[in-house]
Figure 1 (cartoon, one colour):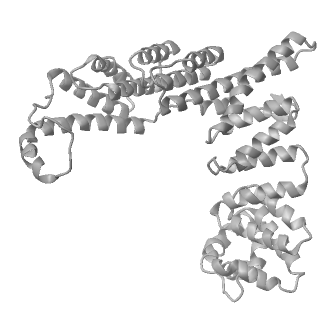
Figure 2 (tube, one colour):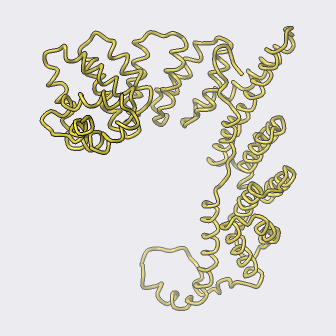
Figure 3 (tube, rainbow, N blue to C red):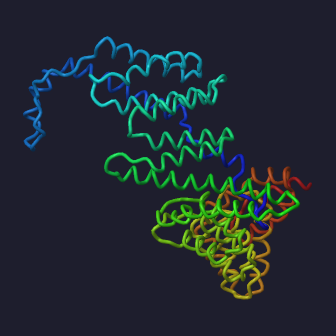
Length: 453
């Protein structure tokens, strides 16, 4: 699916990332905390009298006025049963016995009806998380089962209402029910309870953003369908444009809330680019990359660079973007393009920068056996050798690397590995050892004469 010359960024694999599925490990932490809380309650019952007699000697700071001689709540038979049930659920989850976990889970929600043990918010969240995790792995789970759980948990309290609605919409989206997912988000977007808290405000903003993302997905689908038909329909064009307007309202608002909003920014820019609003697209990407109120985000600079390159922007502006990206992620794959641009420059300072960029790439093990990077280093040094002070330049760049670069690149093991897997790489690296590490006897070069005989 394309928009002009730009590939649509939301693919089926990307949709999977929208689903907030907790891992069994995270759920184990929640279970352990709940079980530990019950255990602490039992311990408190046993040692209450001792602790109360010592409390007055521990601190003279003003304390909350509590009745220290009040009888603490004791574990009843009902609480003991739910605790044992929770232990069985935890054991079943750890061993991936999903059917057994589901059977025990059918009994555990009774804890939500208990009013004798204080606030039940933690029990509500635990029930929600465990139930959806079991359904996510159970081989016979159906969409109806998910819907029942989500609807029940939405009406069990207000604290997690918005996040439950958001997760519910994710699951609907994964199952292809885009319109129903959007409806869920629209309902939750208008939901209010009491005085709006900071958490509720942030959750509402997140829901608005995801609703706009669904509008973008619908826009993509309709645009693709429309482009495959032979006849143009003005009403259909207007319908597609309406989805663009609806989506763009909240997607544009995102930049007023600092954070990492990659998929939302990409979606908005793609729509702007499709309608040839390049000025607004460039403004959005510049703000996302350079607004100091946002956290440092290498992707923001990648998106800006890719957009500028699609627009055939001058090389000078492209290098400016890559320069910032180099500071953030010196091992990024775009550093190959950055070093290439620097190498083509006529400035001596740019050639030295190119040397530094490539050496920093090779500081990372992921580039250690990359032939393209080593050939780039070879080309830079060959061009650098035309200058009088080239040895000083190389020596300065390698000064801090002499102690560990040979072990990273030029051991007997590397020589054996390169000769077997990539002989061309060895032919490039071997002559560079004398240039990069002069005066050192390296096993990498010693290995070659032995094997040539």
